[in-house]
Amino acid sequence: MMTINEQSEKKLMTKAAQLYYGNGLSILNISKLLGISRQKCSRLLRKAREIGIVEIKIHHSDYNHLRNLEKRLQEFFNLKKAVVTEVFNDRSDHIIQSVAEEGAHLLNQLIQPNLSIGVASGRTLYELVQYIKTFEDRDYNIKIIELIGGLSRISANIVATEISRSIAKKLHAKVYFLPAPAFTKDQKTRDAMLKDSIIKAALSEKIDLALVGIGNVTPQTMLIDTETITKKEYRDLL
Image (cartoon, rainbow, N blue to C red; front, side, top):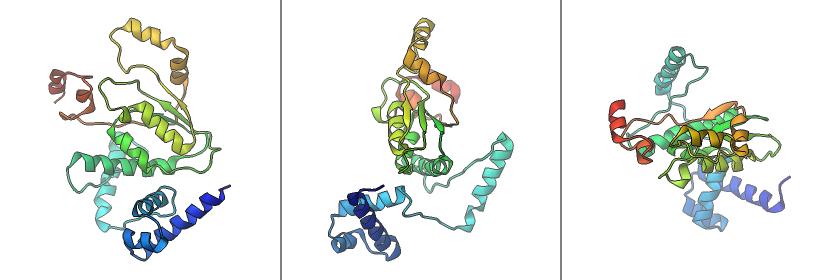
């Protein structure tokens, strides 16, 4: 049950969404009309999309070629489902945003009670988090399991631990962290870590779906940024 403040915010959110998407008013005009700041108006509109008050659908006949490509991928790789998204320029940040938004849309459709979700690391998954719908229901009994240990020299925001924590917050899920490096210098260190009770608990969990970025082989790949692979190894992959 929502509190009075939450009910009031939802009504304000709905009104702002109607004025913006339905009546075509600008954020500046809406903020003046509702007596709120432009920053709060933008936040309300963003949240209205996140929680499903606003759903945006684009109908375009030229998207048939994307659907045909999806079908070919499904048949060639024996996939149950493939989703291809269109991008309108080749800037890496734009590509990441487009893939993340489409991925989150698919994930929102797959969420169900008692689901176990494995989470890896990467820029695309970090971007994906903001498009995941925030669930009001706290009784879904969802588990988030970290799939990969930490990488050195990497932004704290895009490691699996932080991504897992952010997703769990939106889904009211329990998190199983993997407090270990992704790579060790020798097998002895690896074997010792596998005996740790927390690590064993995370590795023993079964998952229903995995969120993993495929990545790419470019000089900007995370594996090179984190010095996980050498430049020579990178050239050998080309």
